Image (cartoon, rainbow, N blue to C red; front, side):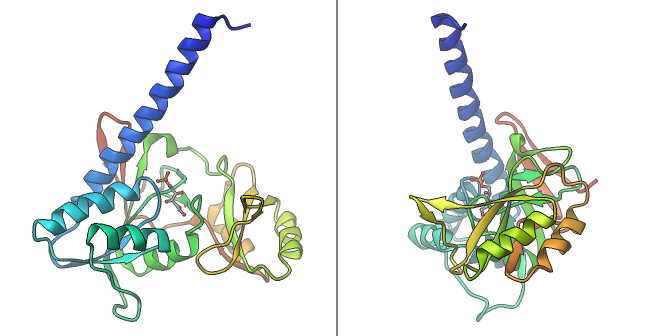
Length: 243
Ligand code: 5RP
């Protein structure tokens, strides 16, 4: 049994860890924003790390940086408008100079699991349209093999139950994402299955298998897409290339 002193130390350790992660996201986000040059069109990621990229860019825009942002979610679009970043859509541009976005897991080859915030489909469409895709993470997201974080798979609501059964046949355990007791709905009007697949030894193989299922719109496996990663542990920041 833990005594009061032990519990207090455990509480202190866990709040320190949370502070470190928050600081790491801020440092990584601010460093990644430095990759943006005047006149660029940039994909704006979604999540608490991308938040710092957007804040840094907003402060540079207020000092004269010319920038056009393409948001990966409605949440990011709202934030970008609030902080004064001019936005474009795919009606205005076909390609982007750069995309900067977070991730839920990243291995040494910069293969990713994304979609913890439910924006995976737009995040992927923006990432593939960009000449460079920089993933920005705190070091807790680094893994040797993907799969501890449940893989988000976006599915159409119609017949989602049978789609979930097909996902099971691919060796994953799907769980319908909920929010306030009802299914979570993406910006595209779809549902998300959070899938427990164990160690994902072949990310591309699993992605292709899932993507072929009727009802699956997109998977959160981002394979061979990131060109660089900006990683921080809350003290230092590293820029990594795929190994
Ligand atoms: C949203 C995402 C995010 O990039 C991912 O969930 C990481 O988020 P955070 O930076 O808040 O940890 O894929 O769909």
